[in-house]
Amino acid sequence: MTDFSVLISTDLESDDFLAVILLLKTIKDKDICIVVGEGNYNKVELMNNFIYTYFAARKDKIKLVLHGGKSTKKYEDIGSLFGASPYNYHEPHEGEMTEPDAKQLNEFLSKKNNVLAYFLKPPRELVKIEDKNIEKISVLMYGSFNLNFLVLDYKEGDTFPPIFKEKFCKLKAVTYLDRQSTVGRDDIIAPRTSNERQIYDYLNREYPLVMSAIQKWNKKSLRETLERFYTSKDEIDKNNTDKKIREFLVTELPEITVPSEIMGIDDERILNIFGRFVKKFSKEDAMDNYEKRFIMVKEILETNSNQMCNADTFVVSLLTSEMQNFCKSFAVDGEEFFKKIGFMTPHGNMMIIKIDDKDKTKASTLSKENVLDLLMNDYTIIAMSSVPFMTVAMTPMEVGGGKKKLKNKKKRKITKRRKSTKRRRPTKRRRPTKIRK
Image 1 (tube, helix red, strand yellow):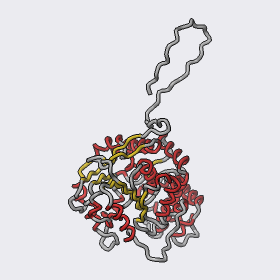
Image 2: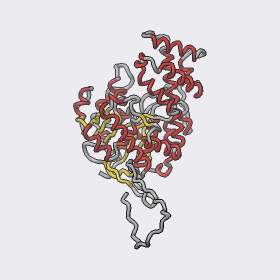
Image 3: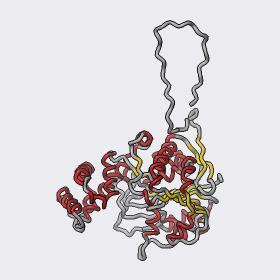
Image 4: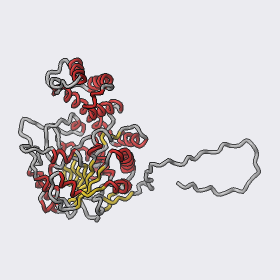
């Protein structure tokens, strides 16, 4: 099916930036609507300025950039990198998509026959889509936290409506990546392997503002971690390690009176505090209580703030036939999965890709190879494909005399022969041998 449009839902966290770059590089000549949120900066401005900076040639095909809902969640000064303005929270703010934006989204969808959607954040806006439009949408999405946030963590009295389950099950098709047992910091992209270094080299060269955003996001994560420890420092008294953390914070931050003040500490001091924190607590057995946070902190320090989750990027790597073929063995029927968490019978096809502990390393390595392939080469999405993967068929496009498709294989070494000092008898000139690449 070659006649389709595209819907991208993103909150523009660090891995989202790379995922969106990959999508906008591969989606050509298709109408696109982008829904952004959440945070304390106007992400519509941020996304528009990102597009004007790096994808100006595609801006005519990006028909709409809408806000999926704003929140007081800190987005640091990342928004200001792209000229986005902060929200004024003296006025009430909407947690969901506003009615004017919902109207524009439904008008966009009403004119389309088939829509391919990428859900890279909790898709709050789904509840605002009319049923006649939602049944046109085939989704490729990152699950785990994104679904938990909207469904499994839902409690009576929360502002988010339970109608999400009903709407979700009316989607035409869903391919859903579930990594419940391998989330957190088990899988990151950091410049350690050759492939990952090439990813960062490319971003540094072609998307320097995105690299700055990734680094700022990591420093923001450090501040939030410190804020979390500080918030609980007067409450935690379960074991000796908690007492030591409390004492450490009091010594390092004597001037802090409320946790929010931590967000104003400069980068250098934050990095120095965590350098001492890791050195002091790395051998504490009881740090298992904070395992994921501790691993994240160490990764940020060791990579000089150059690291991101391989989450939304993993989803986009499923565009490639190599990843699709690899993940077919992990695909399970989605109907039973969704019924277990209270969903009604799905209207369309639902497929879950479950990546477990024993397969996570191989899956991670392969996904990052394909992220690099999509980043370095010129691909075009040519068609939506069929069940079980409601994703796309892709074709590499030759550019500038034929850009060669990157393959992560060892290249045959070709060495020059040393010139001999001995005289040789003249021989017939032979044609050069073709070396198969």
